[in-house]
Amino acid sequence: MTDLELRAQSFEIAWKYLDQSGLLTGEHRDAARFILNRIDCMMLRGERRRLLLSNAAIDAYRLRPVLVTLDA
Image (cartoon, rainbow, N blue to C red; front, side, top):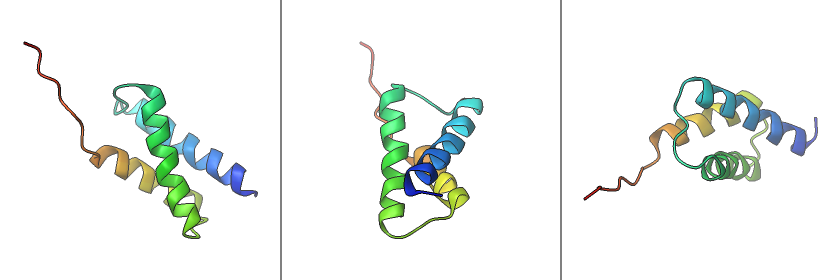
């Protein structure tokens, strides 16, 4: 499997889980960028286990700080 295939499969697993669980919030473009960034960082460090990549991206997304706006 190529790195691009691994990246795509890891992203797809993470995205489907977050989407089906209702955890995707805000702009989907920002969420996708966040997930891919996490996967890319781990791959740059040499990680090649698909489920570890996707699960780490899910955990990072769930634990990310979220800005809350106050409506006046």
